[in-house]
Length: 198
Length: 198
Image (cartoon, each protein chain N blue to C red):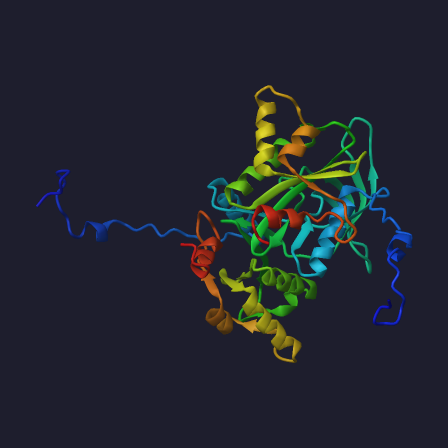
């Protein structure tokens, strides 16, 4: 028995072919680099327009040398009043923060600042799509936790409860994202499912 | 004839009352300051969450003195890849740029960079609400021009046409915003009308 192209049918060929296992492990990429690459991919394929906001800097002194670019000679890092990433997907406002932890079993809430939680509350009230991406760097596990869920854990802490979210809780309340190649962290896929865009 | 409160009816009273004309003129405020104050007002009254993005800076050298804050010792201004303002209003993505001109009769398109126009195209394709706020500083006239209209003028220039938008054209194609007190530049009011949110 031959294929239409004349090649002989070999039922075991596909088994014999050495399957090169693609290694999606992260090779030292930071969460920020992976998200930037993801956003770049979304931008290029027209899927969404989402950018990281520049680091806020308080500029104190600038030199304007002749015939060359202005040089900032003294500046300080300012605390951001919002989350790091925002943009648009299908007309909808997208807003998120990304946090990485070296912890093995839980995500410490000290990773967030009060003002970031406040900002997320304001965005949620305006019906924006708001979430956090959490990566456990030791195991490369990535979770998308919706702001509304985060608020519950945050309030628990404020009321004297535990200061972290256990991995077990994340597995129950958030959405696992499998690290991919292109895009690396396909969070829009989760958004599609959660908000019925698909 | 008396009012229910016992006061005598006086048909000319309202005419006699000296009407104190409120001066909304800008007393040297920049467009950016006015927009920031407007966004702050929107934020505080829960109307919308819109922020100016930090100025993008390429940081080259940072000093970490003991017991005090990190000092940026060398940095350069980077060209922004997006517009200056974005945020959320009723779930919708809002994105705009603000430009001021000292010209009297027309707005020079050289105020925009190619990449800003490209960004606005991408936002418009994602069905974001995208526009520019243009102020003629000499007369304090403010116009909201939707991105789709701006593209027409931009393309006209690209095809060899005039390099500016005349005030006459702005009066015909854009939306005049009267400078107010609180909020100063009530652009959401125009958005309400244009997108039938009211």
